[in-house]
Amino acid sequence: MSPAQNPGQARVAVLSGPLFGGDVGNRLFYGLLLAAAVLVPLLNLAVPQGSALHLSIYTVTLLGKYLTYALLAIAVDLVWGYCGILTLGHTAFFALGGYAMGMYLMRQIGTRGVYGDPLLPDFMVFLNWKELPWYWHGFNHFGFAMPMVVLAPGLLALAFGWFAFRSRVTGVYLSIITQALTYALLLAFFRNEMGFGGNNGLTDFKELLGFDLHHDATRVGLFLASVAALGLGYAACRAITASRFGRVVLAIRDAESRTRFIGYRVESYKLWLFVFSAVLAGIAGALYVPQVGIINPSEFAPINSIEVVIWVAVGGRNTLYGAVLGAVLVNFAKTWLTAALPEVWLYALGLLFIVVTVFLPQGIVGFLRQRFGAAA
Image 1 (cartoon, rainbow, N blue to C red):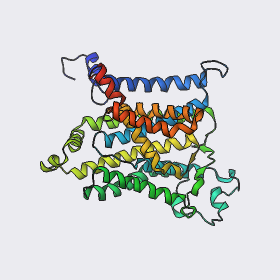
Image 2 (cartoon, rainbow, N blue to C red):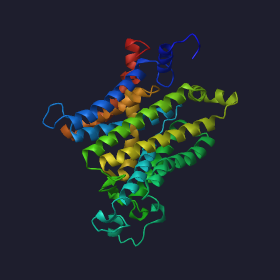
Image 3 (cartoon, one colour):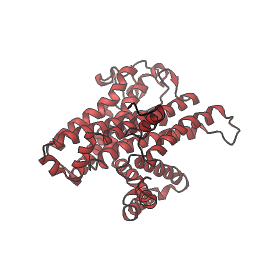
Image 4 (tube, rainbow, N blue to C red):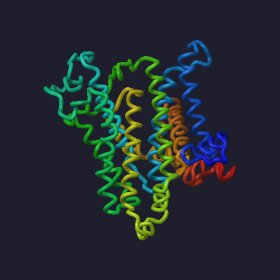
């Protein structure tokens, strides 16, 4: 702070800086996230169930799930909207983070399982496994499982990205191989021999850090954890895009050959952005699993990755908060349509993507910016 600035001016400068964002969309995002963090727990825990203002635990869980989807969406927007990498494989990182959390939750069941085995999960006892696989060891400790939430998707993204970007695979070819990666993992995790529950996956979770997962207060705590993760993830992405690194990434998106010609190691920038994005997706998956109560191979399904791209396209690429908006709106529509008209949901999703591509190529946020000015 310069000597001429007073504390009030300094606070304004910080709030309008790159971390918090100086435009209306960023301020609105943080405001709504803060409001959700205050109102949702209050309406669920403090308001009596008979009141019209009471928020059911089902709604709290549903909102928490939407927030994990929003974190996944900004992870995709970071690499697609800002770097031009159209990935159709980010649900693989989401699912790996979810499986890491699921393995920890399964180890917490202990003798409370159907078969009462203190070491083996129920599905292993049912399949006549005699001992715990080596890669399950350590997952009974939260301090081991949480680094795996980050390392499993991060290392896969590092290995995949190192080969793909060094080979200068771009465009539709990169999209195809990311989807192939997801599909390969889908087939692998479906096998009972893999030791991840096969088709049924991991479920019947009991507790997290000693807290009953079926208790309302625990559900609210998971919702608040999702709020915090989304807020921190968004702030990290905003800081990256506002930095010198972010400006180089934008240059790669707009003119990759020129950026490489003037001396930047394009592959390194792409790789580390891709890895960071995968880590965000893994964290989103880890928060998703205890809220929905199950993780199975269907999370690797290629259609899920396509849906995430649609979320980002609907909300608006290259904004981050547009990705959040798209994730929440599309999944709210999915929740309503799959209950009211389940047979038309996939047709509605395809129609939505066509309408957005033709009439709203910049998404909802882009339309609002054109309509009301660049500040929106």
